[in-house]
Length: 92
Image 1 (tube, rainbow, N blue to C red):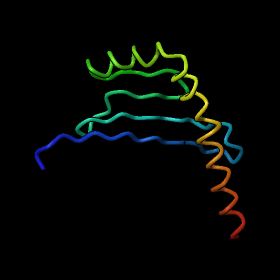
Image 2: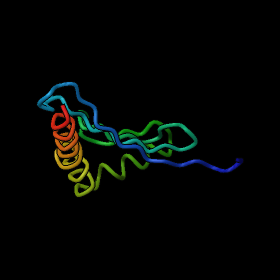
Image 3: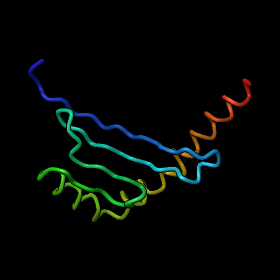
Image 4: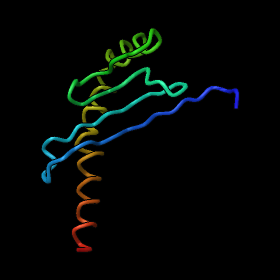
C-alpha cells in the first residue's frame, strides 16, 4: 500500500464509422500521474514532468521507436477496431 505505482495505458479514440479520425494515445503513468505521452496527432512523445521531458527527448531521438508508435494507429488501433466492429455488426 505504501509502494510506487507504474503503468502504461494505450488508448484508441475515434467517432467515425470509417476510423478516419482515429487517434492513438500511449500514456506512461507513475503514481497516477501521466509523465510521458505519445499522441498520434502530435506524432512524438511529450513529457509532463522533469523525468518525462528527459525521457521524451530520448524516445523522440529513436527513429525506430517513433516509427513503431506511429504505425500503431493502423496496426493496433484500426486493426482491432475493425475486428471489434465486425463482431458487433455480425450480432445485429
